[in-house]
Length: 116
Image (cartoon, rainbow, N blue to C red; front, side, top):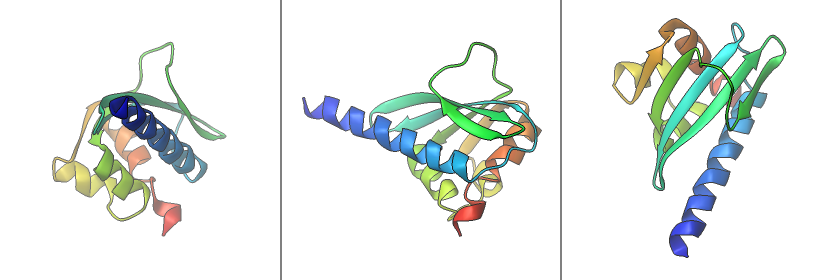
């Protein structure tokens, strides 16, 4: 029972964090980023779909993402809150990218810019 409550809380927190981030991010170009977030409840997959109008989180997509970003929940939170740059986290090995690295980094580096 406690594990189920904790898992639901992690899921809700992650969804709120991504929704907030999307409201403050303007993608450089359209595409899809798959996020694999390491949480206390295990890995969680989320997708962010970027269009010319903005971006929105999604639970699933029907085509291959442009890039996959793997990051811990704590690091993701620090990036979104503007406490750490995505490029610094990447250089420090706190997040990894598979696929279109330039697309992912241009997108990740915008997280948190408006929050400062």
